[in-house]
Image (cartoon, rainbow, N blue to C red; front, side):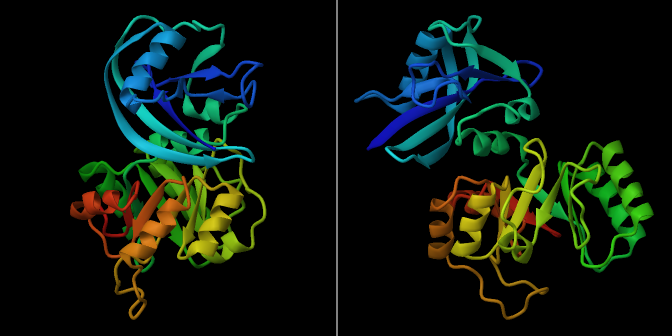
Length: 305
């Protein structure tokens, strides 16, 4: 049975998101979710959002847009959810049907008992479009200078620190402090990561991913992984990562002779997950729209800045 529904992202002036708790008589009672509901026959998703938010929260929606479609399978049903962003509404939201509602930041929501579809939706909100990876071949001093220049000259606010050699703790501490100074989220992709470092998250290589059975960090942290095929993507779904790097999209100098994924292969991968995906491999900012058409959340790379 396929159920089509709509879920709404409503933010306050502080960036907190409105969530509601499912009631005892509903499917998956007591779980927290975005406000919304089923799309009635003959309704568009936008019409359904306006109706549901009026009925549930007593607000009048004036401006909204669709940002993503999420698919979720349960034992007795398949659910297709259109995610809409509310840009303007009138009224003060109240639990019109007796449901509890809260305004919370993303980290607080992730620590609640939430529906399975909530995590990829929240990750869409907290993950930027451009994901910069530090150059492997440069000296430590050059990388630190690059971080400062990237932040000064671009809108990049998430960086993956990648190193295939043992990490120098003093250097890493300096790197962390610079990222804090420039308000940059730092993700570690190092061979000796402990998952205890004072950073925003960690990245698993495809080899590390395939040898991992459980999520190695708390839900408020960001966990990413590199995937190149369906079996690795299925493992990423199982472990519960927050984003994936899908590659190679194009042939690169660092991996000469490696065949890029075809558009058909990419589309198949994107249909198999709700996890936000960054395309990696020979891409630049001006190819963002083409990547988004294939389902990408954004692009990643050393030169994608």
